[in-house]
Amino acid sequence: MQLRESKLYSTMIETLKYDSENYKDAAELLTILMYSEIELLSSGFYARKSNHYWEDVIIRANIPLLKKARTLHQSFKTLIVDCYAEDNKYELENIRIRPKQILSSDDLEIQSHMATFSKIREEIIQSIRMAKHSIWISVAWFTDEALYQELYNQQKNGIHIRILISSEESNKRMIPKLKEQFETIVVNRWGYNDYNRLHSKYCIIDYSIVLHGSFNWTPTASHNEEHLTVSVDRQLAEQYTENFKGIMSSL
Image (cartoon, rainbow, N blue to C red; front, side):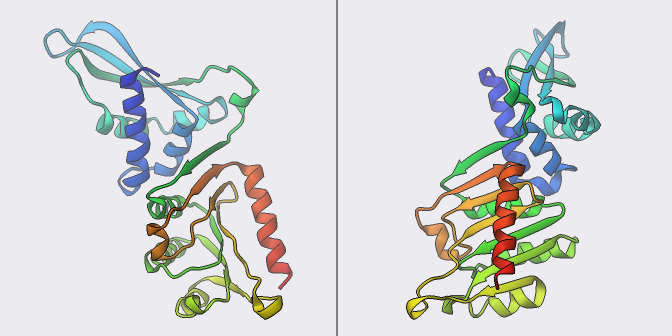
């Protein structure tokens, strides 16, 4: 993508991440964009302003997502109108959705892995808000009230929430609240002097997205040097789901 195309693409992605509640179908739009390219194509015809030309925004969608993208044309239009920036030469005319060119067999796979090292808490919140069916969490320490509230809000929307949490002194205030609202299992420590513990930090969303890394769900984690990878990968999500089920069945 050229510079203007790259700027538009990045603006659309970040807008959906941090202002998703103001856009219809935000989760679907974001998923499609993660596998798409943006083109800006001039028609060669003069626009309203002097010496300006009309140009189209073309979304080159990954072929497995093409049909869905076309059904969301109006939602894409709203987003693009907000994010498009006129310069001294072009004005927006049409939004078109076309297939992305296939360069290899990888272009027919729906997978992405994105690492982040800052604003991790915000990334988790946005991912929670985009869940459509389920959120399964396995975490050692969970004391963040804001993350709890995000989960509570999603449960009211019908999202199925399951939590595995370690039996830790610092979790004692949060555990009763988690048990009251969600399907929560406390994993007791084991081994010599109860030294061994559940030490996972992952979250499975809709059985297709995994958030995994070093970040515990605590306020202090935002001040540490931490990392988080967001993987849109159904096969990987299945592996984490089996791990989650295995821990549950062993208790």
